[in-house]
Image (cartoon, rainbow, N blue to C red; front, side):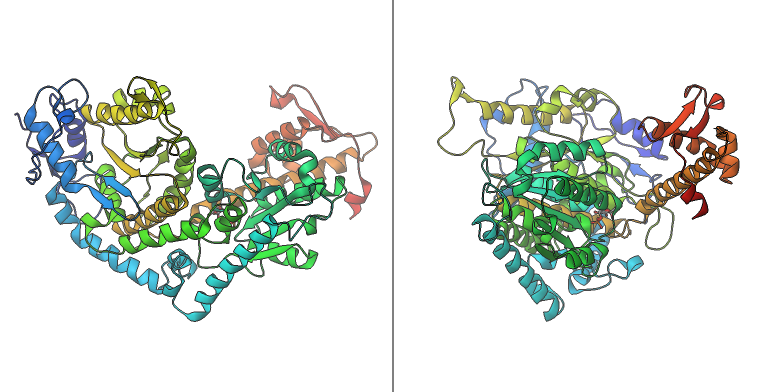
Length: 619
Ligand SMILES: O=P(O)(O)OC[C@H]1O[C@](O)(CO)[C@@H](O)[C@@H]1O
C-alpha cells in the first residue's frame, strides 16, 4: 500500500495535501503540535501505526462492495477495524458508546496533547471544588453539583440544590394531580405549559420536551422564545380557550432579558383580555431578587423557583430551568439527573482513552486544528433528538466562541455547530458534505432501539423501517469516510431520561475540557452584550426620532421632514441609515406615521405624524 509522507512547511500546503481525494481509504495522519494553538503548524503525514487487536473480523466487514471497507484493500479495512475496536469507548451502565475511529488522530498526537489534558483535568477538578472558574464575572461554575449535590463546596449550596429539587417535584405533583388548580379553567386542572424564555432558558427545555415527553403528557408544552409579535400571537392563539388552564413559566436567569420581558407582557395582556388573573397561573424561575423575581413576589405569582448565580444559562438544563418543565410533562427528572451524574463520574477520570468527554475534546482539537478551522455537524438519526444540535449550538458556540484567551491574547476561538437529523439531512445538505468543501467533521448520534418492544414489523423480508434508518446512518458514515471526511459516532441504546441526562453531561464536560485545551473562559459571553447594547441604542434613537417628528407635526401647518432634517434634529447624522430603517419599519406597522415619497428612494421621503401630542413636547 502506498504511503504519503513528507513535511509540510505551511498550513496551506498541508491542507492541500490532506484534503485532496485519496486513492485509497484515507490514511490517518500524524500532526505535530505547536506549543500554542496556531493555524500554521508544521505537520507531517504518515500512516498511523495501529495496535494489533482482535482478529475475528465479522463477515460483513470483509465485504468489498462499496462504502468502507472498499477497493479490495484488505490491509486498510483490517487496520481500520483494529482502530475501531482499539478506541471504542463504552459506558456499560448507561449503554452509551463513543466511536472516534473515523477521526484521524494518531498516537503521537495523543501523547503530545497529554500535558494539556492534564492541565484541563486539573482545571475541571478545581472548578468542581468551587474555584472561580469564570474569572471575568468572579463566579463559581457549579452545574455539576446539580446532579451530585454532595459535591457542592458547602452545606448551604448543597441544601439549596436539594431543597429546590424537592420543591420542584412537589409542585409538579400538585399541578399534575390538580391539588393546585387554575382558578377558572373548565378542565379543573392545568393542561398546558407556556414557557417564556430565550437562549439557555429555552433550548434545554425545548430539546428535552422533544426528546422525552410522552405522547400524552399530563401537561403539553409550548414556547415563546423570541420577541416576534406574530410568533407570540400564534402561541397564544393556539392555546385559545385553554389559556385558562395554562401554567405560564417565565424563565430568565438575569430576570431582565428584553425578549423574555416582552413575552411576559404580551402574555399578561392576553390574560387581561381573557379576563384571567395572571398571577394565579404564573411561575418564575430566576435569580433571587432579580427584576423578574421581585415582580413575581410583589404580584403574588403562583410559585417562584431559584436559578443559581453559579449556573450558566447554557448549562442550566439540570437546574429548575430544565427540571420543572420536564417534571410537569411527566418526564422522570431524577433519572435525568442520575444519567448526568453517572456521566460526570466517568468524565472525571483522567485517562483520555477512557474518558468520553476527553475523547470528544481530543477529536475536536484534531479535527479543527485547535482553532475552529472546521465546523461540527451534529446529525442525530432519531426524530426525537432533532433539537440536540440546536441545543449544542448554544452550548458549544457561546462557550467556545471567544475573542481573547485567558492570557488576554486575541485568539478568535470557537467551533461552529449545525445539523438537524438523519436521514432527513441526507436529502438536503449531505451532498455538499460528501463532495463539496471539506470544512467540517460530523457527529452522528445513533440510537440502537428503533421503537418500543413489540411494535416492530418487517416492511420487506428481513428488513424493518428502523433497519433503513440504521443503514442510512452507516452508509453516510462510510461514504463520508471514503471521501476523507471525518466523523464521530455517539451511540445510545435508547432515548430515555437517563441517556439524555448523560448526553447533556457528556457535552458539558467536553466543552469545559476543550476550553481548557485552548485556554479560554467557557463560562462568560461578553460578545452577546454588543448586540444587546446596539439594540438598546436603536430603540433610544427611535424615541428621539418620534420626539422630533412629534414636535414638527404639532406645528401649524404640519412640517413634514426629510430624513436629513430628522437626522440633523436628532443630532444623529451618522445614523441616517438607521433612521430610515426605523421610519420604514414604523410605516409598515401603521404607527400613526405618514411617509410621503417612495421608500425605495430614501432621499425623496418626507415624514410626519398623523397625530401630534403637545403633552410630549412640554413634558
Ligand atoms: O436567562 P436569561 O438571563 O434571560 O438569559 C438568556 C440567554 O441570554 C444570554 O445571556 C445571552 O444573551 C445567554 O447566555 C442566556 O442563556
